[in-house]
Length: 386
Image (cartoon, rainbow, N blue to C red; front, top):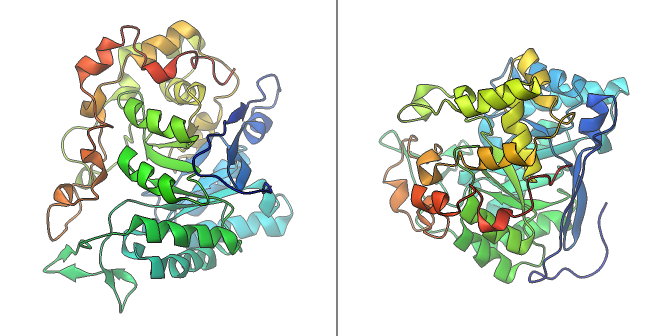
């Protein structure tokens, strides 16, 4: 559904979360639990619970999509970078051909890869994703990260120099965003957004946007709640889509330096889970949902996919929300840093590296200073999904 009229990048329009909490069918509840996104020209329903597919390899991801759709999940997140769009497309086509689902029943997200970070590449890479997914449009197209890697002209992949990926010297986010808007105009995507963008990078785009940012997909879980970045997003009415909402425990060691946070085993989380006769994963997902976020937990395990989908039949009380809000560790909780990929120079020193934005970083002192475990922007959101 596309709204008519002229979009204004400076006007803030709100969101309404619709959750069917009283339905007896959990699957139908997931289908009906929507975030109504109203961002200028873009007005659409986005399911609040989805399936993430990063690191879901070929031979596994198609089955995972099948299990998710059977469980009632209607949001599937992928990316050109994940190299699994073809198998996802095959799974979707099977469901469409069977008549069990229509294209309009689903919300499909994919992303412009780092080697596509030039205005001239946006349409090319979106069409490659659409071809692999066997779709005529996606529901949401995101810029995967704010800095780019050089494209290999021969392989449409990364350019390597002495075994390392080559970082692009400069990126023009303004020109890139205008091409993202053009993809919307062409009907190749129903909405556009970003991923891993900082507050300053969001401000820069919103200053020139004809079609505003609908979503910023970022790491967000109990230990890293993005409280400062959320203030900027709330100012513009940008929805937060949380990847790694369970701390991404399935990551192999080569894509994370150090010890992964054991948030699923946190005594606070397990105690609340026992109280509600739910699993720790369900409590962590429900916490983010009640803050108004979209969640896309990744799994290729049938039981866990089903478990992750069954989060709309209970509500955490205000006391639980305050306690879970208080688990935030500030920047010490961040685990996705783009520091594990072999690049020809230090990505953290690049001008567009997003995680050096002081506006988005805060210390444990800042977190504790709120007193009740909440940031100022979180007031009265404990029951946002009630």
